Length: 119
Length: 304
Image (cartoon, rainbow over all chains, first blue to last red; front, side):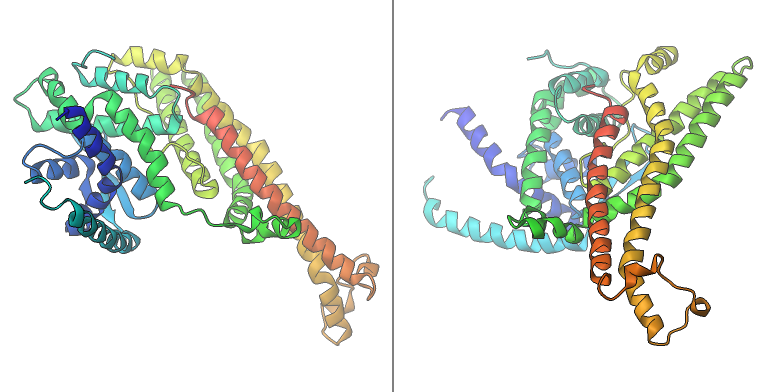
């Protein structure tokens, strides 16, 4: 099938999922992470072929932080501009629990219709 | 469509280009994030040249066009999802509720606080700028004059960023969350020239100077409004308490002119006090918004 259809579909799906995945990554991590580290973790988790471009991670991190779901602090770095390290807040954890519930419901619902369709 | 960038500076330049016309604060943040990623990526592949790393950037970080779209979309989408629209009393169709609804708006209280705070920040900004400028001029004949001037401009920029953060906290309007991107990695003197030519350098200084008279004005308005409003509301009650045998200041009338506390007039006096406080809250909210417009015009680089 047309490659661009697949890419468009993936992009639409990602729109809401990136924020959920980022909250998940940060809630599992024992340490604070900065944007580049998070982007690399996602890349590794999907065998080097990320589901979304790493550049899309940063604006979502900033938006989550501006809305109080993450806190951040700045640490100087040798390799470039100071890094911004993120940590999930209590509010962020509550939202994550909420959102993962919604995600599971949606996934199960969608699966009921598309399961086996690709066989 | 641009050709693929071959260096970090080129990438940032293209990103800035495709973001043209977006919120200046958003552009500033996007450039900052991209530089963090690109420099970290180069540092983690010391065996490759910058050009080699950049060749793969479109498939990992994303091409400038993609990244720009991500920032534009995210700002709209994530904010819409996370900030549910709460029906505020200020939007009620009932004019009376809309008028007094200002008391349930936290922004109005914060703006009132900002009006009081600007006297302090205004004095600090003014002192820093006047001291910085005059010392720079005085030391100009010596070798340390110029480095001193550069350090002074740096401090002014930090103050400007801080003022922006303060205004965002108070009004909720988007202001830059990152320092200004220094621009292409050109030589030291080229950058200094760039900085001197940049109108934002000078408008920033103007803003900081302006904040002293503006701060005094805000402070006076806020203090006068609060004092008169509270006095008009509390006065009649205190006079009543005095009649009931409470003793303030050996019987000196606590309300002047005393007629304001007369039984028939007192309700109007109190109502006037409430009216003045309410108007002050409205004024504070308006001033908060106006201040953001001013700060955007003078502190945030227009268009970049």
